[in-house]
Image 1 (cartoon, rainbow, N blue to C red):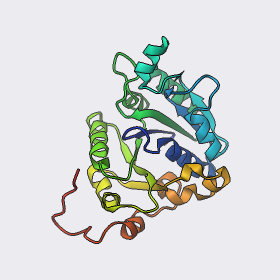
Image 2: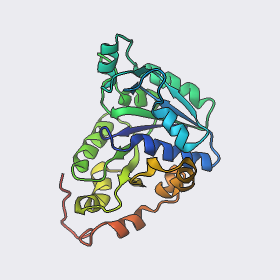
Image 3: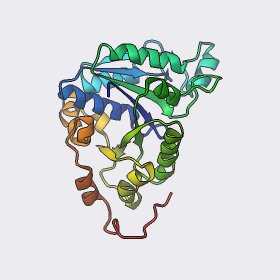
Image 4: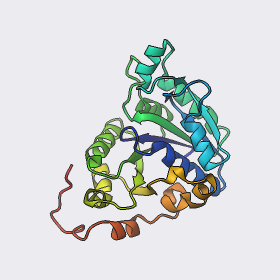
Length: 250
């Protein structure tokens, strides 16, 4: 898995912090890591972007961006309003492939969700993943509504014959409500892929040393961590899980 594409089910689901956790766990396992932000929006030329935040939290990774635009909008819209060239899926794939020749693992972080448009032609992160033949990790929210957006993302991946590696919960609350607790078992069902981690609420606010120390505890072995999905589900899910006839509520 030299390249892993990381997308979210939407905005503000913890995608950048999850990317940092994956990077930190890989670094701790002795792998060299590069992080490529396909399109950074909402930051000025001298401001820190998401790839920089991953490097701050995770440690010595190579941080790169394909393009950045000042307004916090979808990449295609942000590029148009800025009067700049849009990002093309081919550019993202080419940059990631080059980084893969120099690193053990390249993490390609998208902007927003899987099908957010890069350009007027409708190019997306999914197209870049297709060109790279790379698996996709989906970062999802914990609460009510996440089953619908996660299943839609998983279906979009399957329709494009892209491999869904699994799902990571981007922010697990300290006091999860009933919806969050039910979603622990329902998320892998609607995604058709395993739950590969759950980051604690506020993980991105930890000091870098603490973040790097703990990152592996939030991720499954498939992502170089020690997190146990079965144990987490037993601990967090409500008692009715496992009973026959239960249908996930979207």
